[in-house]
Amino acid sequence: MTRSPLHDLNVGLGARFTDFGGWEMPLRYDSVIAEHKAVRTSAGFFDVSHLGRFDLTGPGARDAIRRLLSNDIERIEPGRCQYTTMLNDEGGIIDDLIVWWSEPDRFRVLPNAANHERVMAAFAGEPETVVTDVRDGTVLVAVQGPDAPEILEHVLGVAPRRFRIATAEYEGSPVEMAGTGYTGEKGAEVCLEPEAGRSFVQALVEAGVAPCGLGARDTLRLEAGLPLWGEDIDETTSPLEAGLDFAVAMDHAFVGRDALARQQDEGLSRKLVGFVLEDRGVPRHGHVIRSGSGGTGTVTSGNMSPMIEKGIGLAYVSPPPEAGETLEVEIRDRWVPARIVEPPFHKE
Image (cartoon, rainbow, N blue to C red; front, side, top):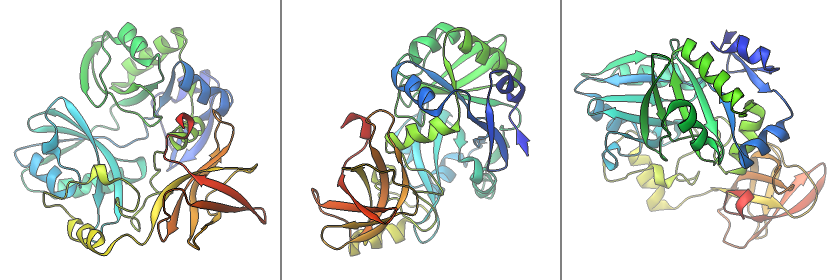
């Protein structure tokens, strides 16, 4: 099993570990709820060194980004980053990922951990491109929460704005970061060399930033309504069905575009919706759901929201329910009423 370069430091901080895609990563340090609330109210940091990351350079890099990904990098400019998806020919989501556009012909691509090799191989097959795997030689630390920008300014001297890229030097080592995250809070994902990363994490601890594990990362992303690849989205779901229309630019050619155009013409047969339970219960992946008009579906992600203390979830419903339509989720042989809510759930 692969370990993060920060593994020993995580052990010293009291981490309890879990296997995540072949990586031994922190599940929690304190309780999941305590870590979740620290991020919502102040700041927490996550060792996310398992996430994929590689540099894409060369004269063909920009064309490769445009051809293989559903969003259009031409919507932004160097110094910014973009959320996007890689699709198969049927419009299914091979991966959802972030692209950092660092320089005119240099991009850093950050796929999900499980898809790192596959996405990297796809780009390596594109003409006039050079792919450089940077995962093994770096660590990635996400600093998240309302106090995160101030803390990053204190420790690194700079904090990137939302979906902007920033660089710095920390203890003689280069730092690249982006104003992104997976919690719905302010903050950044910071990429450093391993030794500098260890010192950076220690500085965060000294600044009072709570170490947080994958357990809190999952409850935070669900509460923010962010889909998880392999649960809410995969190769059988399209970005249109998943409500990721903003990550699709139909005015340029890309793999999967024709399938999405057919979906637009024919109409969607199902849609991913957010819901909040009206009664006690905790929805879980695989629970059956039904709508008041006779639609049916399955919960893809569900849990108890630590902030509103209600069951929340995401589910595909077919046919797509109308606004204001009622839902019911089958939990332990009883149908629990729910209402459709547009995430983030904790800000309704």
